[in-house]
Amino acid sequence: MILFVCALSAHAQDPVKKWGQLQVKGAQLCDQKGNPVILRGVSLGWHNIWPRFYNKKVVKTLKEDWNASVVRAAMGIMIEDNYLENPQFAMQCMTPVIEAAIKNNVYVIIDWHSHILKTAEAKKFFGMMAQKYGKYPHVIYEIFNEPVEDTWADLKKYSTEVIGEIRKYDPDNIVLVGCPHWDQDIHLVAESPLTGFQNIMYTVHFYAATHGDYLRDRMETAVKKGIPVFISESGATEASGDGKIDPESEEQWIQLCERLGVSWICWSISDKNESCSMLLPRATATGPWADDVIKVYGKLVKGLLKKYNK
Image 1 (tube, rainbow, N blue to C red):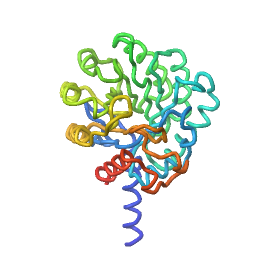
Image 2: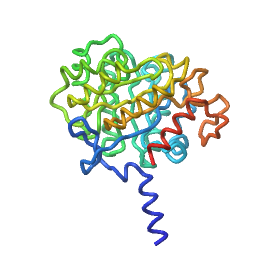
Image 3: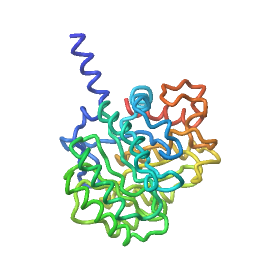
């Protein structure tokens, strides 16, 4: 009996064993049986700036010590030494994270972390990822992080091409689609969503000290119109990633997500001297991390994950 109870407990702590192949029904992310699911987790920082955190032990720490059910691997497409300049190094960072997530039975977002369109390159990359990892229910594809100047018409064209490439090899894993203006113009998506695809969701990003009721209202309206939203990046800080931390606005955002059934991920596991970096530079590359190396925002995020991912 004791062994049976322990086995049930271990199973409950493995999100992919618990929920399996994710699917989208209406505006809601659901498990393999069609029951609503909310994923809650953490994003790593840019791979080409903080490669030291791209290792299997960090994934295990985030799952076991922080209670994350999803980890986001932010593969940099900009700034020096990015994927386009150095794909071999990028995959040396991404592969251990993706494969550790699979081993540890947490979901993992493969994030094309860019602010500019690179259609041909994205198609090639995600085709490769879908061929390699499409058989695993753990994988979620985020095909464009934070478009800035692109119109929704341009993003629809881009997304159609990239999703089409993914679906050649992976018919069912979730695809996350960015929307204009730093993933804030979700109202444009609600007016004219993509058609012809299943299991796609649209990303909204918020930074709670900057983005308040207007963006919360915009997101809620979109969800009520049937638009499946996924918060693939967020912070309690100002939009710059720095400045003040606003725990009250952050709590309003989290409560809204919980009420609407929207998954949320916090930015980021990094050691930059800014408010939204969760760790001090003296934190180990692997974790687990004692409280004295977790910064104020990191403690807030860890507390939220432990509260909601029980």
